[in-house]
Length: 101
Image (cartoon, rainbow, N blue to C red):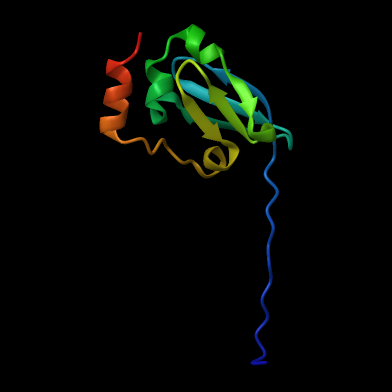
């Protein structure tokens, strides 16, 4: 043994308890009391969705994510907490946009 210590850190993500979305902001209330907000422009499918499509969401992944079935969009708590924007490619987004009903 060389005298160094190592530790394993386990992070527990809080679950989603409420979602509020408008034309500008996605706001998520978490079970630990935090509220996390992100600009809707970070998620192009949400930005291009109608108010009705945005309102149709499901808390998924045992409470650790949000799914919009009409927009085929999924956002996880982990990404929201660290401020991760959508990683969808422009080509994929444009394909989705062209195939919208």
